[in-house]
Structure formats: structure tokens, C-alpha cells
Image (cartoon, rainbow, N blue to C red; front, side):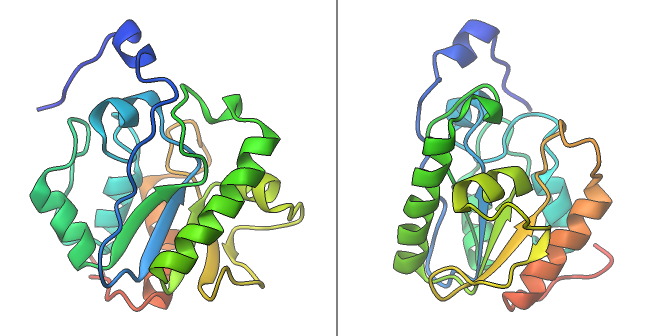
Length: 194
């Protein structure tokens, strides 16, 4: 059952930070641009109704059961992600209504923060969900989606499509293909046909 928030309730979560979801045995670290207000309100990454992140993980076979984060993640959901070797963080920690509210300086500082996170948790693969944020934060203007030629603090670096409903060029199926490729490189056995 989904939680409901009115606009003023959501606005009260502006600039809130959402803790990373990182556990032992991390293989694949997904990196969102920054938390949305719904994510901040629930404390669950990619929680806004209509966000396609978790449906794409399920379609890719990265997770073995559906997860609905719209009211927050249960302990069982968190444990399942960690057991699968999946972690989630953000390039920029502060919540906004839209990613375009972030400044270039925030994205560049977020890239530095991400480097520190990757050094401390040592995933095999880092998958940044958003090409424009990656280009801006890391100063790689010509970057394209997919594996990047340079790694990140010893991890293989991928740029994958952003799962937001605002990214109209992608579907759950196309997101799943990109996410599965990064997961396979990270050594996560994906369940094809999920």
C-alpha cells in the first residue's frame, strides 16, 4: 500500500539527505543523481511512484522478487538487495524536487564524494544513473552510456540510463538491459527471463 504525501509535506523534506544503502559483499553500486522529495520522505532510494528503477532491477533479474519502495523499504527488502551485492547512493546527497535544481559545483563536489564512497566500500562496478549528471560532475563532456574507458577508484565504471519517468527515451525493458549488463560485469548472476 502506497503512502501519500501532499505538496507541502514533500516540500518539508527539501535538502534532506538519504542514507546510502551499502552492505558487506557489495558488487554493484548504483548511483542516482540526488534524492527526490519522495525518496527523502520515505528514506528509500528511487521511491517516487512511477520510478522504474526497481521494476527494471526485477526485469533484469538482478533482484529475485519485486520491491515496492513507495512507502519505504522493509528490512527484508534491504537485506535482499545487500544479499544480492547491490548498493545504492547518490551523486549529490541533498533532496530536491528535480535534479535540474542542482548546480555544477554540487555535481563536481558529488563526484569527489562518490570517489570517497567507492574507496571505502570497494564495489566491483559503479553504475551512475544519468549521463548528463555524469558528464557535468566528472567533466567528461563526450561520455556515452555504457562502460567507461576509465574506472573509478579501482571499480569498473558504467553510465546507465536514469530510471525517472521524465526520461521518456527509456522503458523498463531498455533499463533492464543496461542494468543487467552492469550487473553481469559486477559478477551478479542475473536471472534471465525474470
